[in-house]
Length: 282
Ligand code: MF3
Ligand code: CO
Ligand code: CO
Image (cartoon, rainbow, N blue to C red):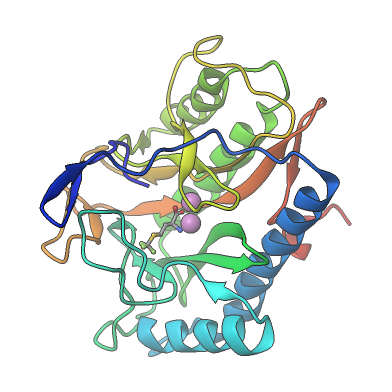
């Protein structure tokens, strides 16, 4: 999500962005529903992997995911017609971000995948009123050594961030863990977009920055639910938004990668609602 709470207008009135709250689960029933939404979102990423191939367009991937989400999973694809108050409604059901696209890439029939491309697919589903939000990187054909390293280090950044989560830790601890690992590998952290509280609302408080200082910021509390979704660049951290008002790209046009999970803070750590089978220890 964008980091600033933009102002927007309705009927000519200037309004503050909808009041945001810290997302948290209060009951076992809510936890069960977040678990279910998370697992359904994860299943979309598991399903789509076989379809990522040379020559396939990102719009074809969108259609396959849309039909699977609506028909098979009986869920709502949260991105479709999503509006953040300033940009036009998002026109597709998933985000597909190829190579130097950082996030919020719009699936297009003009974007056919080539060998060597790297691609983030970001899926958010709504089931029983609760959101599951998750993304992963795919490599098409044979990626460069740099692209493979960027993909691996970015996934490690996500896991470092998750490992920093437990009741009593701080938001700064999460950002610090991610930033340290990215910069030790000579990559940079995008600052204009962040993780977010999630539950009945898609983008809620708190903002989860992917950089920061240890022992700073608000303390994490048991039951808080949010995403961690580091965007890591091979070159400089700076980004710009294309005229479509959604697509975020690196200013230097170097590669960018992102991985995302939806998690819940527990007394001892984090529960990953969107964990895929391939991530489970065998
Ligand atoms: N799934 C994205 C996130 O991680 C948000 C996409 S909003 C859209 O927060 F409108 F671009 F789809
Ligand atoms: Co998200
Ligand atoms: Co997402």
